[in-house]
Length: 206
Ligand code: HEC
Ligand code: HEC
Image 1: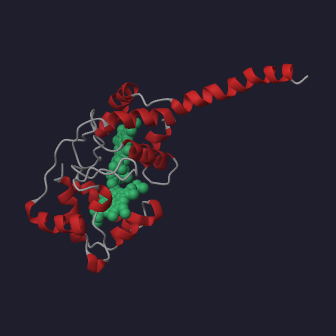
Image 2: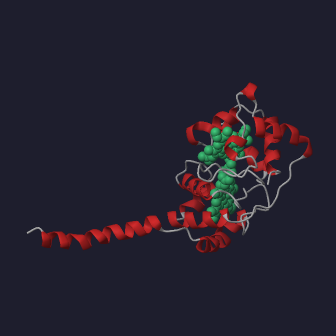
């Protein structure tokens, strides 16, 4: 008695489930991402994600999950930036994945640390500042500053030091959020001179 009803329901169910599964299983397309990156993002971030000035962060070699997260945060105004909110608002979730896959596969151009900042910068990066309760940056951002993709901890290696300082200041003043306030707590405990030193140091990492 129930059989005909059930078999009628199965195709209807498949109609719902199959597109959903395909959608979840959809792999990011770096080729589609490349087209988007070179037509839209390149004006500021450079065609391969290596921006030419510190006014724009480098995206080359940045973690895919982190880029996607940042785009969602800009889109919803959680991370506040008028330019990037406008940019991210035009992107679908699939396009965010594609463009992130493209930039994360590019090679970061090397940056350089200023000699006078290296000693202090390295000390903070590798060992933290125990007296100020600042943990070692290395613990999350990696020994060489390449970040931690599964955890979506961003790459810092090669990033423009002026951009890094701006972000640390934004974290310190709660103008930029971070999970559990991690970066806000850390940045509040750094002096401007310490921010400058560690930012210069990470620019020189590769
Ligand atoms: C008109 C210039 C401009 C364009 C075009 C632009 N961006 Fe940005 N982008 C910026 C600026 C400025 C920032 C830094 C924002 C801040 O200080 O928080 C930024 C930051 C970012 C960040 C955060 C990087 C980090 O290390 O946290 C990502 C990700 C990003 N942009 C992706 C993109 C993508 C993808 C596109 C193309 C769809 C794009 N941007 C187009 C100016 C631009
Ligand atoms: C416990 C883990 C942890 C430690 C330790 C840590 N960070 Fe972070 N950091 C994060 C996370 C998570 C984010 C991403 C925040 C977000 O955008 O949601 C981040 C983001 C950043 C950013 C922004 C990068 C970008 O591309 O915009 C900078 C700069 C930064 N951290 C510098 C540092 C420095 C310098 C130290 C050491 C003094 C440090 N971090 C220690 C977890 C950590």
